[in-house]
Length: 123
Image: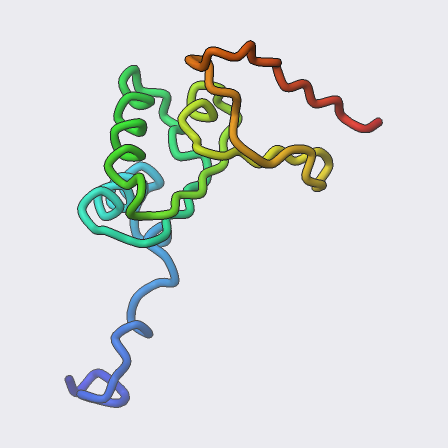
């Protein structure tokens, strides 16, 4: 304790780096963050491109995660993966930073004919 400027009153957060990425490799930090997300319930999850590794069963595992949290948590995730987009209750499509579409995707199992959504980028 003698080495700490404020002794027992030291703020422990000041002794650690700003993020786990400063201490760990990218893979290690991502694994710890994923484990914490799976082990702990949060009312809100913000996930940026959650399946970067493209493991063969990763879409299935992510689908299981979403189903487990459905109705108990809000999960926002960004992706360009068509398989992941199909798992969302609602989607937000941006076109040059502006909202091009927000809402539910057509249910492929419905009796109605579904119209494919086409987004044309502004030039």
